Image 1 (cartoon, rainbow, N blue to C red):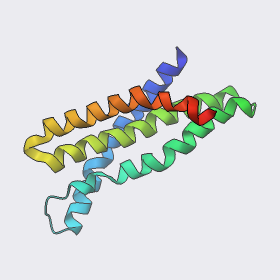
Image 2: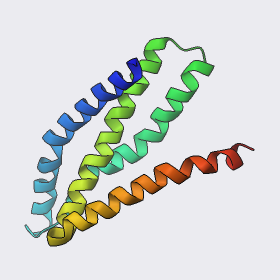
Image 3: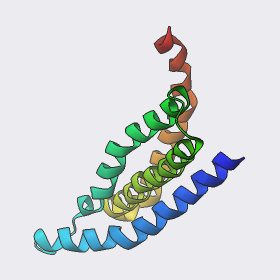
Image 4: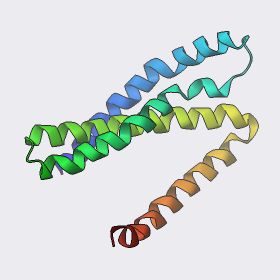
Length: 130
């Protein structure tokens, strides 16, 4: 039960960070590109999340095997929620900006793809571990 709460804490911190940084970064990058619509200006936090999330997951997985203190495990859980939100929130704003009028359909496609990956990706773990 504590893991769910800590992921929630990390997610809330990630959402607050995204709320503070996404628009600021977007305005800054948009000015560099001549004040034209620039949906890719929403993606710097996604890159941050994409590079940090694998190392955080590795820290979470190896903290028990390395007999690290429980605080390290709990910190990894908080950081995991933070990195996931830093990846998801700007990505959703990017899709909304990129597809403008059709953003509801694009967000639905992203959601369906994410659900399918969550359903079928665990089926690949058994062959990979063998």
